[in-house]
Amino acid sequence: MQAARDGSAAAGGLLDNVEASAQEALDRGDLRAALTVLMDAYGADIYRFCRNFAGDTQLAEDLRQVVFMQAFEALPQFSRRSTLRAWLYGIARNRCLDAAKGRRRWRKRFQLTDAPAERVAGPAPDPTDLDQPLLHRALAHCLDRLDAELRMLVLMRYSEELSFIELAQAFAAKPATLQARVARAMPGLRRCVHAQEMNA
Amino acid sequence: MSHAGADDQAAAACDRFEHEGLLHLEQGLALDTHFDTCADCRAARAEHERLRAGLAGMAHAHTGRADWQARVWAGLERRHARRRRRWAWLVAPAALAAAGAAGALLLIGRPGPEGPTLAYAIQRPHQGAAPLRSDHAQPGDTLAIRAVGGGAHAELRLYRDDRALVLRCSDQAPCSRDADLLRASVPVDERGRYQIVFLHADRPLPAPTGELDRDIADARAAGAAVELRELDVL
Image (cartoon, rainbow over all chains, first blue to last red; front, top):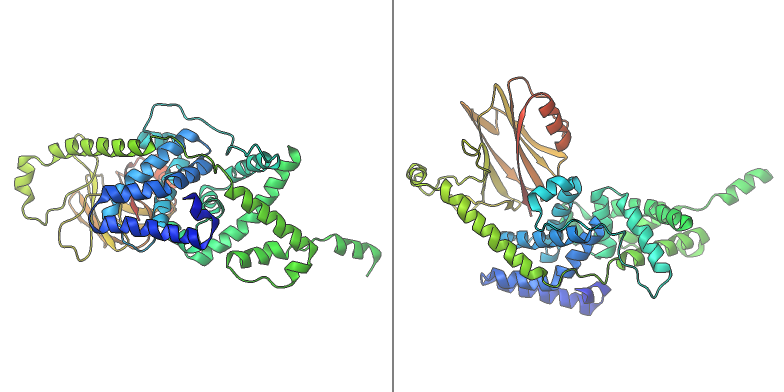
């Protein structure tokens, strides 16, 4: 859903088409078709969010897989109180929190492969921008220092570009509360990034 | 004003963007002219926008494995196969005979040597008596919790997102107790990750703090047995 991230009206229309298409499949009882629409539309976004949150490629793969498996099983009870996109991010939030609570407990419950987890230093930098690698490394380091909920909130807001209405649905909190939390978090994040860049 | 005082004042950077401007931006409100004319605030805003762009660009090019969707379908098939095997021994002929009419509660729990000791079912309003077997519910559903066994002291607790204690009871409403069977019926109205905890011990249980991990640790330190089930309210 990269095209939907540029905030344009066309992008918004694309999202509406995805939601409508998935809802139509749900209405006729075709869960497989509904999940396929959601995976095609949001699979890359959910993976990116999980990878940025966990900083771990293998864990992000497993998290994405579990998110969509759970989505399939929960689709019959989808209440339409939110968009499917926000609903998926709510599932991803819960799974990422489980992972953050303890890798050992998570692996016992959700480990889907035997491959050892690969720890990456952060998101891969854009080789054409000499400033970006340092900034991304600094962001990855500083995000890792936030508590799990706040890290998720910042990533969903600025990396995944969810609206505060969608964030409220994913976090089961009021938009005003989340706006204040994000506003309070960013100065500290900025200071941390600045310190990282100065020390690089 | 002394020369030293003026220097101190001049050195103090304006932090209105941090304390006020940023929140207004998040709220979608227009910023007043100060934020256009103040050099400190303009610099702070520019830095904020740089971080926003950086966050928006993180891991942008990575989409993961090419076969990930096939793995989702394979994982679902494996899970369903496991459930078919698991429920085959639970729904034995004798159990069916004892279950009675359609209002029987199908329980979700991990069977131990003597059967499940903590289990729950999801009851949905306006959809008849048939309960749901699921690890997810939706706002407005009711959790029918059942716990069997325990010492002189036993209680049920329900946490949300590890740190909100939603329910704590033993033999008073919303719990009820019949010998060693403890039941509770709890509506869940808020989304989140819920943890159903059954604690039982031969001595009084420590009072909960409201934080799941700490409360479980305290209970175990006091000699209590702890069982836990989790579900999402989506």
